[in-house]
Length: 430
Length: 188
Image (cartoon, rainbow over all chains, first blue to last red; front, top):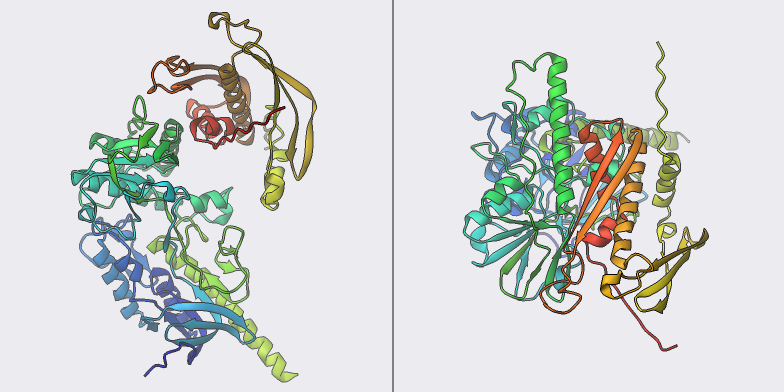
């Protein structure tokens, strides 16, 4: 029987991987192929966030054929479909089994410290020692809620997408959704369809059609090399890492979900929630420009796809070129709303997520609390990071993006361990 | 074969700006600026304002000279019309900020500008400032800016210049988003 306190030594390994999601399991697989001794610690069950922190109707934003991990790919009959959450969980669990990943479940890491021997990792179920640690505990653990949230009148219920399951969770009245990335748009669509009036606060966003010239937009982003773009391919990595997720939905009819579709469905489109004063929400007057920018950027993406097709000489065989109606901004966008009048009963903060690295007790954080790293090689020997947006490539935070990053970092990690072993030998020789 | 790239010159020192961005990203304190103006009422709706000092890069700074901006109201407001109305000066600030942004973004993107002209128009219902209708706001109910830009670029590239300029414009942000305003007073 386990002692009550978690400081008994549960084990010592060369590498500890924190998190048994796609990134951690991809790393595990590649470590196994190099015969590197390791264990994967998982706070819950394999694919925990997918199981516990997603809404019911969510499907992956990438098509099934793109769901692949090292030595593994979607085996089912519908390559163009999008996995539901239970399918994602089965997919990742299937991978863990196939890879015989050494996963220890139900083990929540409470601290990672550096010692003379390497790392000391404390959990609710004992302490681990490791020469190297791979942080693969996810990119989207903690909802980012703007500082103005406490100014929302107390009569309004506030919730975050990781706690939302379906419209039945909400009061019957109006819903204000803050944020217009994939999450904000998907929730706006289903909540509006449930009969609740949705007001959607729209800041900077990324617009794209689901299907372009007969193929999923992700197909083109992969084919043209966009998803493989690396750190040297873009001017401003900060911006690349901060991009909101594109306005996409995975659905059986492969429909495009954009602000125009929501506007037609009756959703009220307003500017970014800029402030709350005396119970009154203030919306930014920058709505027109954020929509214009998203339209221009979408057209640049489509221009790039067209040019690539022409270059390959494949343009004639593909479906014809299409351009979409500019985003329709209301003639007189609403600039404010009195939140005390009962028009809104729920507010959903679809304002993004950040990783939770609070367990890391090593001084590697920048002034905004983010881990300092170079493409996943953390600014501390033996510490690695996986699965964050644009960690090494544009695709880094996608399931199919785990492979290349894990491959690069496992190579770095292997040579780090070789270096340790060499210096150990040298020390013994002395 | 060698090609001679045309030299793009919009009068913007992009290297210096990018250098400053790089340097400031390492020194958050130096990026804290304070902008100032002083004013003195003359008579009626006429006020004289002076702009000279500001704070930035960790120390007091000064313009090369003091700049004077007067404000007044037109004669149909029973005023003397010594200068532009304050709300017109707000439009001037927006025009100046957006145009500077267009030039900087164009320079950074290698686009030669030949002319950048803008017309600005703002709507105001005087029922607000006159207190006739409490539901009417005092300020502008809307602002329209029309740029006409002659440059070596496609229509979409020019539209993107103006969009990016708005995205990074201080005055656009000041006008389109709320700002906490704290007015204190003491007896002279």
